[in-house]
Length: 308
Image (tube, rainbow, N blue to C red; front, side, top):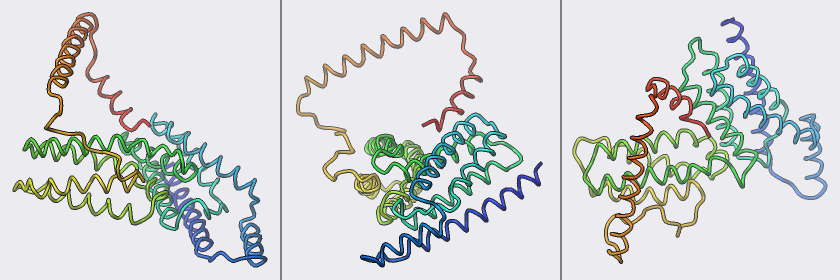
């Protein structure tokens, strides 16, 4: 069985590489005008052997396969996941990516498919790796086919919160908390990066990559350079907006200190304290009625960690 999987993987990756090379060549061809352009389009369709309707159907099959693959890998269902992967790769055969993404986007999609396939055929199932790779692939395919309402865009709020946590920890002089928030930000970026490469300009992705590398060095240093980190975190606001294509005037950071109406904020804080105490009382009451198995709870949390 192991040898069959490996042979199937080699064949699938070879087919995928051939398809992506062909699509890259098509994308590299300059668009013409008039009869020459129409002839080129006809030739491209003929070379692929797919009409526009057939291409549309294949892309729908691609999306459906990626969604089923995601669900089955989240569940740890090896047999169904391998079948879904075969269908996903089969849906790509002969499909042109022209008009859908850039050459960099094609390469990102190919790498994500290959990484997911390699994760699938490993002898030992690793739940976290399965969850991560399937989430990355689903977001990448979704980004390819839904440029306006892609799922990966939902991560903007999550990553903005990570950046806000870094800023608070930095202002509070807590290096360990800064590193923790940075690692969370880095982990979320790993999930969405292929989808971002497929949809966003390479310059925006490269800028965020560079910023992430720089802040990673700063947050990992033994000596605490608060001033440099403050400037870097502020720069991260612009880099994050650029990555997600957000407006420049859209705020990422909330004010940490300095409020115009202290009485208003004091009342609001008091309300939050009352709510927190009420919630704690309810939790204690429920805990006295029900015994929860911690081990089962952790398993459920791990399984849902990368749920979209």
